[in-house]
Amino acid sequence: MDLTYRPRRLRRSSALRSMVRENSLSPADFIYPLFVHEGSEIEPIAAMPGTYRWTVDALLGEVERAWDLGIRCVVLFPKIAESLKTEDGAECFNEKGLIPQTIRRLKAELPEMTVMTDVALDPYSCDGHDGIVDSAGVVLNDETVENLCRQALVQANAGADLIGPSDMMDGRVGAIRESLDEEGYEHVGIISYTAKYASAYYGPFREALDSAPRDITTKPIPKDKSTYQMDPSNAREAITEAQLDEQEGADILMVKPGLAYLDIIYRLRQESELPIAAYNVSGEFAMVKAAAQQGWIDEESVVLETLLSFKRAGADLILTYHACDAARWLSK
Image (cartoon, rainbow, N blue to C red; front, side):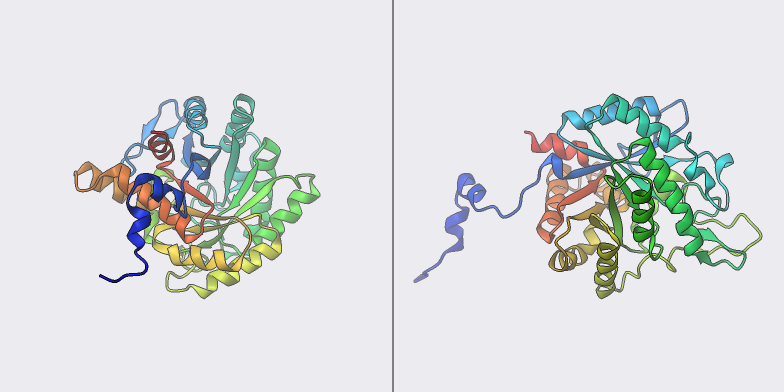
């Protein structure tokens, strides 16, 4: 064949392929999500094989393991006792609560690890929503934002490095930024859940935290979160959300879920110079684990290929439950 250019020339050896590789993975790219509870025992999460609800003491050991593997950021999610859940989620700004207590312990034991937190009411709410639900069944925006600001301040005071508003209330990034700055926490960053979709991929996560919407009161409770999380049909709307979050002071923009929304990651990468994070969510994790347990896929290869797809789409950071396994595989 009379061919001037043959792309295979640069694929014929491992050395050549590594020389022209466009994207790569590193453990420092990963943010490791961890579940913590006040119980005395580590609890396995059935829908997420290999993940656990950690006690505070046991969590310290897992964070040290992640650090030794090269991971430099963890994000904390609390499983709150039912007796502490209320309609306004007030436990979220308890200075002596589970998350502030855990942050302080982590920072005392491993001060160099970056600690990210989740800002939303759903783990603390008896309704299971990210905001306050009124008597008519409407999730209130501005009243919720006031509580989110209080929650963020408690977390910052405990030593959090990155505040992660995951609630999708309008204006919450700007309000949190203003609250943090006024109280002297201008050094604390905001990693905003910018394009968080009303997705079916969150099921195992909600099992882990017992945070799904539920109707246990006399008032009507929305059966899902579609009045504040984004419609999976929409892509341009994500650009609007990103522009607003950037204007309001976000330091990092996040897309959630990640794998089913690679196009959104790509769009935001074209629109913004800020770092972009992708959340490889619980449903995506569970599907890989289930298929691997059946022997239908090679887990290591599929996980690393999946994580690389986020980088290729434009993500700088990846929140993933595969973090420790992936870091170990990359070190081989």
